[in-house]
Image (cartoon, rainbow over all chains, first blue to last red; front, side):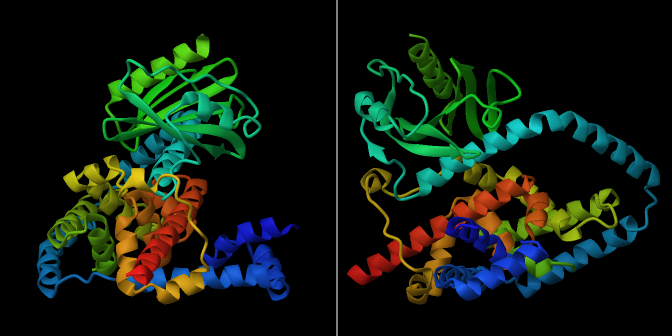
Length: 248
Length: 164
């Protein structure tokens, strides 16, 4: 097993999420590998520091008393209500819902993952790896880094400004992430090859994910995602410009 | 009352306000009691009640705002700046409790909540998945990003303190 694979397991090891066999194997590796042992020690210290710092707020005694008084009568009324019929109905509904939602689960997971990347990258100190407002600088930067090429729109009469780009990964598939600004909002455009790992259950998608507007479509073997907290009309306009550029 | 201190601490971290945290905890207990019949014995009570609190937060004005807004300071000035990795042992040794509080507060809510549930509440990935309503794989990637963002924020604070 390579060093990278061992290292990728350290976080789950510290969180107690590895299987018994994996824990044992990694424990043996840590005794031999000083680099991974240092990584494990650092992550343990970070987890401990956050645990201590995170236990910050304690409820006031008066608030505790007030809540106790409020919920005590309600507890007596509610705890012993027979609800077998309700439980059966609920079980049937949940089962039906799971069947229905399984088709969309993969798509939802992909979109949530991309929203996470968008939020994390904007909150990071280096949101872009190539900094330029010029599409003729940003696009060539991706040559040799992603296994496809793409076209970016001319923005002369549009309210958007290109801020730069960076590499993004979705299910181990490399792709391009472009950052656009519109007024004080930031929009991420993700472009990946259309593969089972990056495709959605529908050709075109327009929806909210965690309150972020998302537009996604597939064209010429590529899957596009436009994600941001800007006005949905802005997201749609940028998506239209990208579609036109992709078809020209 | 079960989990009262934990729920209050989590609510205060989400809302960053004592009164709103109290309202959130109160709403959580009332909703939990009202909907107790829907709780299935044998399933995870802690994940269930934390989920009620989180959903109540998301429906509050502060929650809606927190999920819509991605805050980062002086983004334009920071573009192009590269972060040097510092060993966390050194970093955390130099970071005060106040600095860690501040770094946690700066974290976007979707990352703050998973790191609090994992490191403070010591929930398993599966419990966090049930509480937040996301797949376990997403829990892992959010945790990883949250911890990376925390390290970056702490490093910036330590550097700033060193330069002052």
